[in-house]
Image (cartoon, rainbow, N blue to C red; front, side):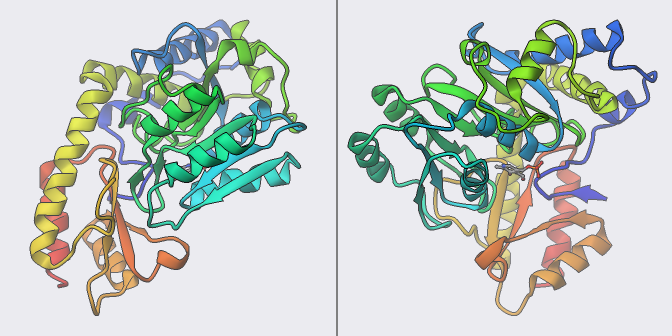
Length: 354
Ligand SMILES: Cc1ncc(COP(=O)(O)O)c(C=O)c1O
């Protein structure tokens, strides 16, 4: 089965085999070394992730990393945080802050629209905010939000930016200093090609060394940071998922890093577009698409269930649209171990239905 859902991804054989390494106690020096190497490698994925930043490794899915970041770094009192939401994951960060009882203002856009940077500019000029929170790649539609422009606004206003980069870290460009990034949350099992179970936040060291605002005992980034700096871990880590992440990071680095991965994804996405257009299936978004996932309009007379079930029988898992978009589109992600032959077979299987 090949997975075209946006994570978990189809594993390479190398990453799969790495799961079979010796059983390890997370309190032993062997795990301390593994954890240290993973944290270092995560900070080496992007060249401008300077010594001012550190990676904190968590056991949990991408949502755990986002909630740890939002919970620990956004203040409980004072100026509100500004959340930009043009999809499910922006809305999720707003819900997290509301549940944590933190002051928040949400700037909502249509899920099919880009971020309204003019409105962001006016909002930032009008009041002060503790932070701006945005989603880099809004997986809801496959939109790559314009974080370069948003980051420039944040830098100009000196407001820290917190980024949900769960579905973009390792596959699209992230600029730590230019974007005034205070932190970004991501996961092992999307563009990095690891297995589900571990996620992480790359955040500014000075912030991690300051006071935590976390209402949670388990998802307090500062606790993890303090312990991990001592080569320890406050709680049991997903040891085997760490083996896989370590191997996946090595594989990515040997393959040319995030730029090569982005090129590969772009080639795969172009092949899908080329194959789908003659079948009357076009991209749902006109512009601003990521190289990682694309949403496509469902053709007349074909339901998502029909498409999904037929493709699953042929050996492919695809993804539905979310919320109000579920009847209008389907989504294909190109992360993980996929060959040109796999994509050819996928296109032929879709073609046999249209
Ligand atoms: C942008 C974004 N943020 C957060 C998440 C949540 O990640 P998880 O399902 O691993 O908790 C996802 C999952 O697809 C995502 O795409």
